[in-house]
Image (cartoon, rainbow, N blue to C red; front, side, top):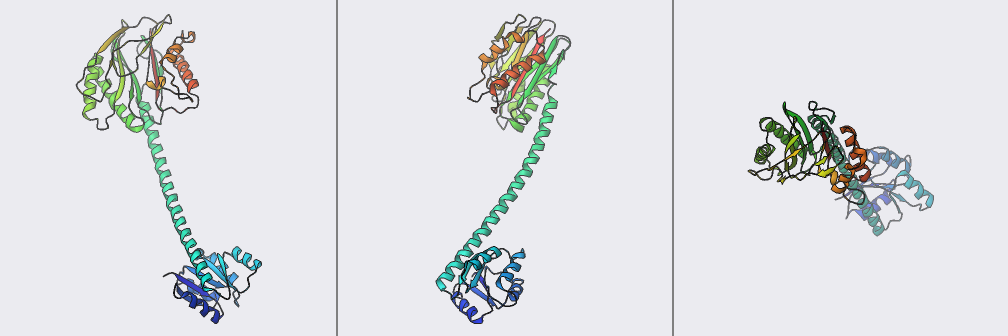
Length: 393
């Protein structure tokens, strides 16, 4: 049963109010403001009915002292008064009263007003508890987000450290000028590239796109990149390399992720490139005279889905001054504010412009990157944008 504290110096009025309430509420009675404060030190009622006109400490002073104490300030106080005027009500509300009940008492009015204020007080407590819980949850979420942001930053730096430094002229002996770069759609991405020396006369170039984004894709990227590099040091056949890498990835691929990948092994002395394409975008060849074309290479199945499959190879030849441009679908599938794709045709036209001729790798990529950025504007991209270009010199 809900508990009401009655405070009134008039014993007759006190008993009258208690009689009206006793069947509905537990009622405690005191005859002064000081007694009310002493009572509150021992008990916590659900509501206080407080007479205004009392000697020594009137209702206004009493409610002031109640509201100053953090323990009691949420207890609703209804003033009891025989003086029903606007000035008294205004002062009472300013001091923290929630309502007024005028003497002589009407049981129906009294019960209705008390019930209403108790309901409001209960709703207020529920609302404050809800706000407190949500605030706590929000703080926990912010802490978790800060932790995740820190972890993603570490993952991004680890991932970046595993990629070859983007722009290195004459990176592989004196036979090539190579430049590459990646712009992740998230803090860490699933795209990767690599170029490295295999032996004195062979170099490897790789570009790939792992399904998904974020940390899982980055971890899958690390596995795929490591396997590719290890196998390439042992085997000079891109098709055989991809076959063995695919089998190993399929063994422990519980997340069912996959990777599209282009691997080329270049014979430095002749410019011959033996390559295998695992579901990746076709490379673009830009000849020294400016002729530009997509190369027709066998598009094998992606890595990581089905073991024991064959990866067919292609051969192509680079002459002095020829470029090979490799990219992920984040370039051709970049979208603008109208949700239109950048597209393969647009990319080919850009690579055919006269501005490209005579550029070094770094300027070459910067030019293409600027064209893509101009196209997309402020539109957020869903995929990583990765490009690699090397020139046979």
